[in-house]
Image (cartoon, rainbow, N blue to C red; front, side):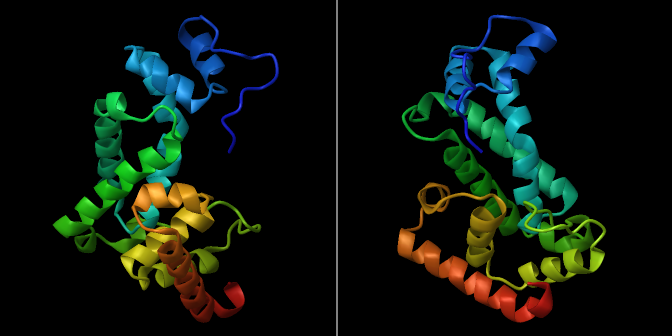
Length: 200
């Protein structure tokens, strides 16, 4: 999703309350980060509202139960807020934020907490590729298939095909090189295709 401002909206309007929040919905992330660095609490709230649903989806799709996914996202947002002064304003914000989130998910995994939760608490959500309304069978099959992938392949697949990131952004999130990421995505796709069959 582009962060470009619509024509005629060169900057965030100086308004308050609900009007300010509405105006900020089209403001580039980089501008909101700059405002947050200057101590503007509404600007960071806008960043949270913009990214929270996708962050929660990513954490849940990584296998974390509901409570652990929410905790990982909250932890990531707290860490991101505390590290805003160290964020390179010339770089895209989204990959930087998701790198923090991915690290929080790995930490939760390392604690072993997610394996003690029923996996049914973390239903698969994804960017729609086809109409799957009411397709409970497909959702369950893809969830089970994703559960079998190694963590690195699962992470790469989700970033590429669910979050829609390009490989440059994925390199920022994971710290892995281009060839390694392409191989992880390919292996994940091959494994999922083999398991899902007609549902792929």
